[in-house]
Image (cartoon, rainbow, N blue to C red; front, side, top):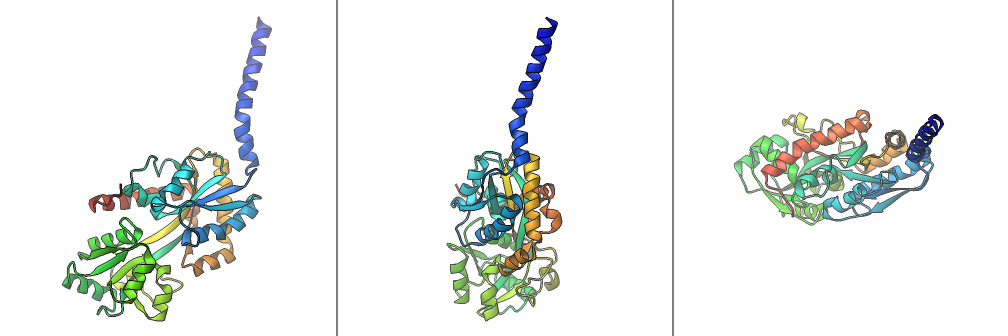
Length: 329
């Protein structure tokens, strides 16, 4: 009986070890097959280009091919859902933005939790927004713009690429902090809105800076201020909102990388290490700067810090969306 009991214990211990082996061994050997980064936007856009810029150096660090797959629709929620429902093996990742990984949580009824069902890997980059106006608008600086808006309540038109977009929320926040009112005019993207502003059909926009750089440099529209703590590399003469008299008003779109929840910590660590190394590459930095993007602060490249930042962004924007009754069914 004693020998049988000892054999049973040995067999049970062996079974437990075998059950634990595949997951830990997989994490140790990761990655053993190609990795797919799911981009929730169409090819050629800022998020897609960022994914492809990082794919090559990250694949070299990890020793595996990285494929970028575009899964679009519903403000990016379809692509995010694809990753949420993928195995937690580190082979399917989600690249996205403030819009796809925060704002859609206040805009759509999702069947998953944005903050709980994905594991942050790193913030990758950010792009400040830019406050721009048509050339015929009499305001030449931010204080004059605010004064003009107050003198013409509800009359100004502001172009946005749809309800709940970054520009829409930045505009609502601008109204809140300045005590101004204006009308939002939705478009099917930023490009047609910029064209109408150039033609004088709408008065202003607050959108990602890369949408305006060429037009500002050509003189077809005017840049008023950058809602960020530092000036843009691409438009160094445009003052920040702090400098222009509206301190603390900041708005930017940021980009990050996530894995499905329950992805082993050592796999997250390997992915984070590869992403951090890629972001430190001077060639990568230069390519991102040409896109109007800046590499994320080093501390926000840490998974835990990025998770805290993502939650803080949700805590900031979701109440604004609720108060504005922004919802898409």
